[in-house]
Image (cartoon, rainbow, N blue to C red; front, side):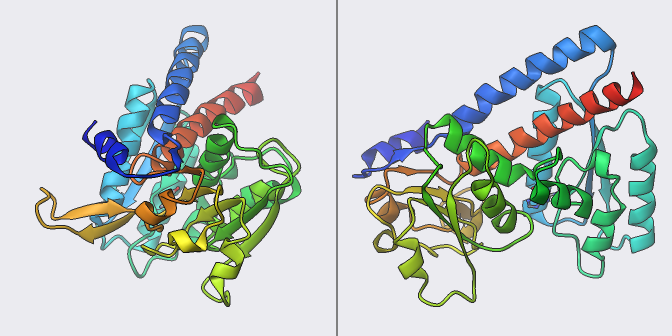
Length: 308
Ligand code: GUN
């Protein structure tokens, strides 16, 4: 509530895309589907949630995911491992989750502590339980348009654009960031021939020369650089839609935690120029978790279909 009041006080042109409200609507839809599934079949969709180490940001993301699962009536198999966990120990945990019938999806929170081979860990997840959409099998299927689990943050961004009435077809979408989790897959989804796609996509990254010359051409700008203030108002075309994927903790005196969250955009100056903008927090983050719930539900449905 307090945050809304702050936003209203700002002299801004942009309409905020309220990820929290969109997510709440979708989570209620999912909760109802889960209740129906349980009533009809007795099956409760379940997610194995693996957190290795004690990174505070990762811990808070995982807690939020587990709370959302519980609120949607789903089961979560919570696994906390120390930062000293070996590769073999972690692979053994994944192998066990791969074979547990009550676990339909597996999520290993990234990044993993140093010394663990992230790519090998992802490869160990059974593709039919890969609700993050990170395994090579799912990434490949997405690239060629086969049925697959779409990665949660990119999928959440497309849902936000669709549900807030942003026309992507024929638009020039500029993505900043080439990570496997956000940049590369969101560029792919924006370009594919499907609702929320059909855009002309430019993918910018740390090697891009004169970033502003690209961002100023964007009708839709997706900022996933992982760095505050990557995009300021003068880098945005008037009327553009800006999706800020960043979640950065910046030191802030006078708060309980000693920090505040900000995105990858300079919110105040971008809000003067954009037509729509996602806030941080309360924008992309809640949608990411919502798509994880949806994928876990879908994983349970697919398991049932294979059994019948
Ligand atoms: N770390 C940051 N985003 C994600 C995500 O979507 N899934 C997992 N597993 N780890 C992450």
